[in-house]
Image (cartoon, rainbow over all chains, first blue to last red; front, side):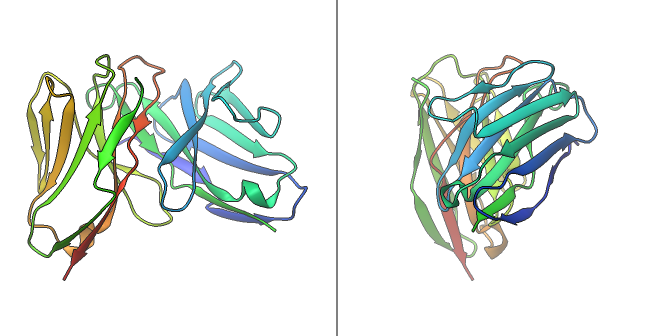
Length: 118
Length: 113
């Protein structure tokens, strides 16, 4: 089945520094990837849609300059949290869609990245 | 229009019992309805999914029931075991290649031994 690898699983960084999270589709090509943020005991909140070779589409209220998304290839999207602050601490999850999986609508999620800003 | 409402927020069942989680949607353009299981510290994993041309789908102990006219769908977990204690999310999307998933609020299921 389709596999999405997300790295790192957890990261601790100092306030004011930047952190990059990688999301890779291992056995399929993903023209579209999605980045979510999840707070404890809450649902997944879509941050942005990452499109290969073009600019990401951000959801309302998500700061484009803080959460930089790059989707340079069909198998890799990255999320960079710039000038991180404690309020950016959260669980970040990526998802990619394999167009040939199952009914053709299969979404596979990465294992998530726990970001803690101290 | 884009919301998916999920209930209950939390559910406690005894081992061997049936767990039922319900979701309702408004957007009639939705044509893909998956359920995801999430364990603490992990990403969601697809459990089972259904399209609106089918009223029921079963995979192992998991069954989706779909009521198109009521715009509702539900997840039934038969013979619930402690190992299925997790958070469950329903979701919906429109079946275009770049379409996003709209998630329900989640249900934290606890199966007591």
